[in-house]
Length: 193
Image 1 (spheres, rainbow, N blue to C red):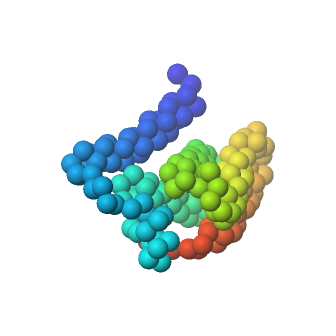
Image 2: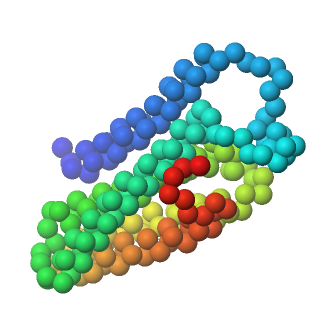
Image 3: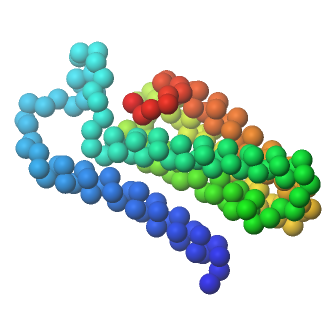
């Protein structure tokens, strides 16, 4: 069986799992709650009182998942940078570990992007409502995801070129992520809101 089919199958299975857990939790929560007829939508309540309503249900779970995946990607990125810098400095062969780290990096960034798109849609930002910053964030992150997969273009290049190109890709993606997150109204946060 082709390695790529297995890898993308595992990524798809992980994505389906990540999406099904929040849906099951929301369905279970909704079935146990009694509907209240006097409840106002969060946007109306926020406009009238000036206070933001806490996220509940599906949006809270997707936002939390987006935050958790972020830290997984950070750990993979730090390990990849260390390995790539060591490979450039030592002039060593581009081994299986470097390949796996670059694959994990590109898949992690892609998974974060997919979860972010689900969050964007679930917040209602796709239909407009003046959330320009969300669209700027999504656009920059889309470019970052595309660049994260560019390491495959150098798979037949000499080892030193592969290390330098992979390191450059990781650094450029990090700069794009830094700028993209900085465009959001809340900017950089360590914990989910």
